[in-house]
Length: 145
Image (cartoon, rainbow, N blue to C red):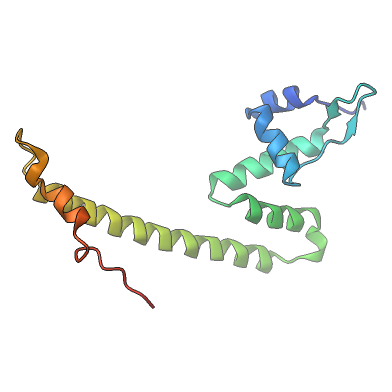
């Protein structure tokens, strides 16, 4: 069976990402070329393609590149890790996302209040309630721990 080798452009096309993204992932240590041609072109194999899919899928569910690097470490050394570790790591990400969702809901609520308080009429923005509220230092008090 012949090994499949992809040049960077071919790999990018196959995974539907830009060459620049691949180079960035390589610079971040998330993926590396299997070998190089005599003329210096990077060559990637099926393993690197699967790693790239892993990276892209992990990004889609919200993992950062730093977190993906950790997950790839777990992926590469599966026998040295447990499902409990991976599940715990994923649970931490869920908790982080839930906190972001709560923050976004608060932002939406505040924006909705601003939106509803504005008359939205054709008159000058001189007395616009949205602009006045945004410049009011007392309106958005930041709670400090």
